[in-house]
Image 1 (tube, helix red, strand yellow):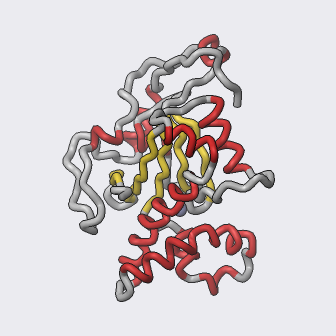
Image 2 (cartoon, helix red, strand yellow):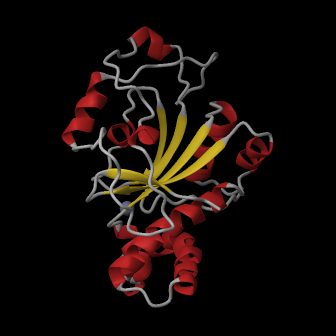
Length: 232
Ligand SMILES: [Zn+2]
């Protein structure tokens, strides 16, 4: 991880395109009907950050630094491949992954997510942050059924950052069936982690000056499509 003296654009590799095809992205088709009216339908092009070019950066170019276009915060789930979801290649995404795509609120104690957010926003000056949750997220299932977490106390502790989202879903949608509640929590958790993200001073400062954009996405494992969440 190193900074760049000057912002330098790298091009996605053919590997990213291959990965996109392997996971069966529906690049050219219209998006399926979203399961909830709170989720807007989006054109596939909105998630195609990269251009699918086969050109790869040279070793010399990579040695000169990095200038990723996005900080991409997503779940550690093995079914998610950020470069394939976004059609990006080497040098285009700066990635944070953990169980539940969680961003703890700002705290001065040493903590990996906060440090990495700070580096991306203050040093690399990424223009966009994406928080991307996904359907069938085991972390969200754990937040809904915490009695099953006795053997994994660190997971249980980490999922306390999901609790405001869980409470919001219970308050907004008190009578949902379990599967729908799970989906609503995935969505609400993305919004909650964006709220937490905004407590970080560098994020707040760059949002205030209008040169940082924050987006919330949900990747649908069944549909193999990404939905952009309305954040207001
Ligand atoms: Zn997950």
